[in-house]
Amino acid sequence: MYPEIVNKSIHIKIIKVMKQSIVINQNNVIKDAVRFSEKSDMPTAMSKAVELEILRKRMMSGECVRFMYLKADGITPRIAIGTLQKDSVEANVKGTGVYRSQYGQFCYLDTLKMGWRSFKIQNFIGIID
Image (cartoon, rainbow, N blue to C red; front, top):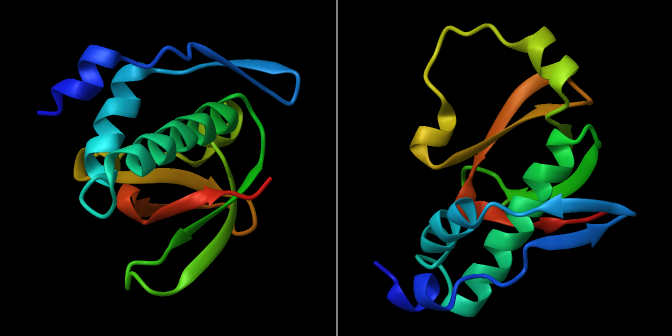
């Protein structure tokens, strides 16, 4: 759909974050960039897609990450603290539904409420710390 993204490819394979290496999945970045491009220009969409992938990888490595996104109304911002740590996820999975990622949503475990939350990928604003 966006040949300029695929042809130039992302040359960043590893990004150093807090003394840890994070390997970025290029397929996820391109898929998310296409979703972000509905609301913004392509360079902004690519940078947000990379930041979302960094968020995903940091959460999966066991970190509790603070980030911001717009709620479902598209106006109200929400600051969230979440994780995708393997032990926490396994303890809270019920396995009764369909993956929300199939509907263009990012799912995370809210560490304050210890419950699942999700937001539309297009509503992601950024990582706070």
